[in-house]
Image (tube, rainbow, N blue to C red; front, side):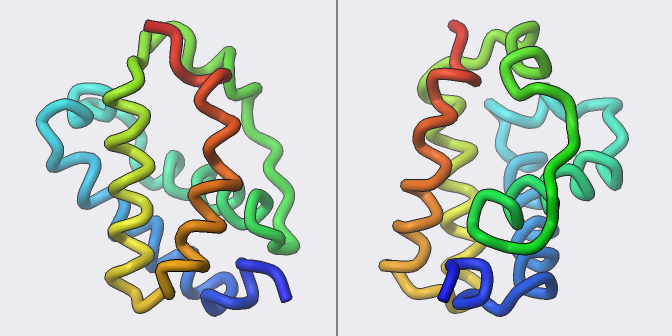
Length: 117
């Protein structure tokens, strides 16, 4: 069974992404990245991305990750904060620590594509 199925599929991913965006837009070190952005559109891309990354049926067809993030000059601390907010959102939904860890591990390789500062 995939992590996607384990956490409860599309409804769980949607709830996690909604909570995740509440968390990151309230975080003083991350909020500036989202000021003036189309949050509903970002959420839709994030849902597709996370679903695809954890074994769901969705296909991520957004822009290339390094291309999108390079101009933002994201550092390691900011990357870690984003991952921690996602894991906290999953935990808040009752996702087990091992499953959340698997999801975090699936996203960890993106550090080299996102961190540029």
